[in-house]
Image 1 (cartoon, rainbow, N blue to C red):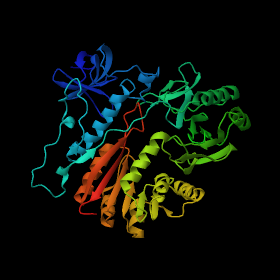
Image 2 (tube, one colour):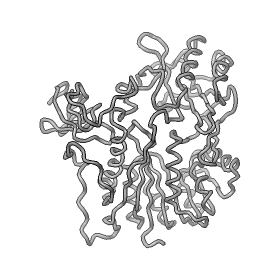
Image 3 (cartoon, helix red, strand yellow):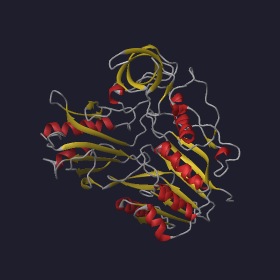
Image 4 (tube, one colour):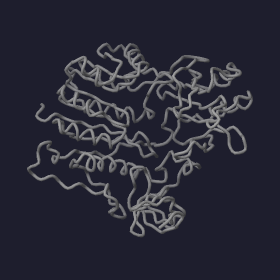
Length: 486
């Protein structure tokens, strides 16, 4: 088999990044734009020793789980890897993804309700095979007792859920100014005026931004030449309050007519903050470190339950407000708080989870390495009248070791890379009764759960939450309990 060959293949499974998986000519094929149950003609794009990458050239027989994508640029954009898969099957895919990581990477037995039968039993690639059970006498970590992986919690309406949109600005092959999204693994813009997962109303904002650029004669940024002014436009909308923020990211310190830019946007319903962000670096990072307000406030305010959060241009804030509520309520439930506990919230960001916990805990300590985020956390505690939450700036491990304050419950919500091994050991030495791990990557969650298990903390249950409908990502809340703790 070689590049550009065409081969007929039945898709038997799906990879954790959303490619269809099948077999042909003794090789495993990872087929882009195919879903489980499809019969397709696949065009080979890259050949390895035991597997190939391919694209879907033709669908011979569509799967019963295939759905028609809502977005006209879904395929070239690549941002919604699962939009061709029915939503029910997307949720099953994510449950299986979490379960497989606990089994394959963590080495845990998994107690889980069986999913509905798939049309073809997968026997491809070793990562889908269950690890053999440990012998009965291998009880150091008690992993054979099993973790309960619950079914993924989905949305009633899995569209227009994102409260944050980021559009790169550039030019097409004819030199026309366009906005859109980068095609997968490239910086080529796929022009589009709307997105089916962004908040409703973003199209009007984007049109006004593009109209200003064209009418003012502002240049757009050229990555190869590192010249031009306008790089990106970022929009945020607070679901509970309807407040909107627009941030124009520029390569420079100002616009030709900043008043005209603000005037073009300020009358949009809900508009609260219009800002410039300055990014003059040769980088893939969208936002620079400095912003300047052109009109309105420097933040918008959102609410989850009865807690208000101020969101600045540089703040991290979960992008799916409906599912964030579900995620945090699950984390709170897993904490088992009675009002008498001391809780450490590591990677606390702007205090979103900390303030949820503070309502039910005796005292909460939050740690975050980003100073501005901690300033936001302190302010969020103040505006909510929460006095039992204290925040520290610094590395989680260093702060945790320095303060030496005992913890009944530890909550961690790390970035995709997970926890460092030293931090796992530091948390374990603090000897909390329960650890609540909020994860955006089930692979690093499973790895860290295995490390905790070596220190006597066993994962009891995990609840996947679909924060990213139509995409392959999944958030998971996992409860790890200390052996013998009451």
